[in-house]
Image (cartoon, rainbow, N blue to C red; front, side, top):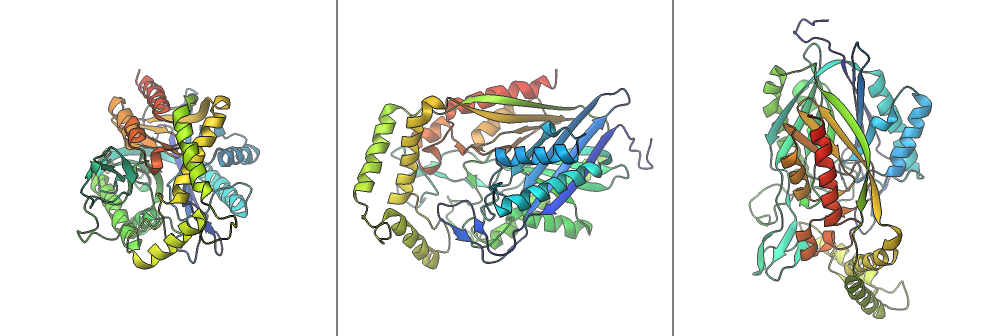
Length: 481
């Protein structure tokens, strides 16, 4: 069937669904060592589902269901429970072709499936997916790549070889940032056969954590992106948000030290600024994308379990960590309620910093509590590592014409994402971190050597990172054979 716009129905179908997952009343916000109870809603939390299906007259078919959540992380238990619900309610739906990803906002509750919020979340996820499935319509797609400054490397290097996340850059021994950033904004535009934009899959290598330390619920900069689309098109455009490889990235330009007059990237002004930059990138690509809509594409979706070796903690590292734990514990008051405990001193410093500092972070990861928490994790990792030689990660690789989407379950350092992109045969490669599950930071060897908060007690290290890259790239490239 040929539409008046010249777009022919070639069997490609796209459907969308969106639901509000904002909890009612005060909620515990997840993402810091300390608890934050929300005082109000700065912007609502959403889950957005996109169902892409292809079916030919000869019987061939393919399916991908991607769901983005305004949460800090995705969990395997959450995804498994959602699949079980969908199997019962939509038996014809191949739930193996579904995966969840999170935007990494620190201004939302933890997605515990056994909590009241988990129940709300599961019901709304199920509804969004079913809506997307039921609303499938003949469609075309096109892609675009633009650039926007949304994030910067947050690991600060010093002359002695050490590294600190959010370290001070005004020290005389500051020598630079540990790794690169990634300013690319990847976009997959979805259209109906009248040439009307229905939604956009947007891939940005910056976590949604501008207001990570605030006491309100927020979808962070993605709320501004949605708002800008609504204003531009006078209707809601679905935006499926994906966080690219960004484990060592944040919205802050640490080297310039907040001296340039840029909006505060720890507050709502930063939300507006980054959201507008991302939206402007979409508008820069929009015109050309509308000229290049395709309704006939190569569409493949492979799901594979990767057995990724866990990070080995050597005996020397274990002994050093254990010594630190014992030394700090030896100074702990016997009364856990004492203001002199590492925990209570940690909380007191946060409260003090929130009153006097305009910029975060307000918590001190180099305090006794910050140090012992990571060192204790190293000790426990050493004690249990023989029983856990592998982390089994669910990998999704999807080819949609010239674009490929590859998932992972980590806060993946940007170098790994660049590695996959550089070796990929796709014209445009979307790396989607925090997908299907959550398994902490995945740092590089360079980061391990530098140390610091995000490269100290990681379940998977550089050996596992190499396996992830070396397994993902051939799977991507096999789709072009």
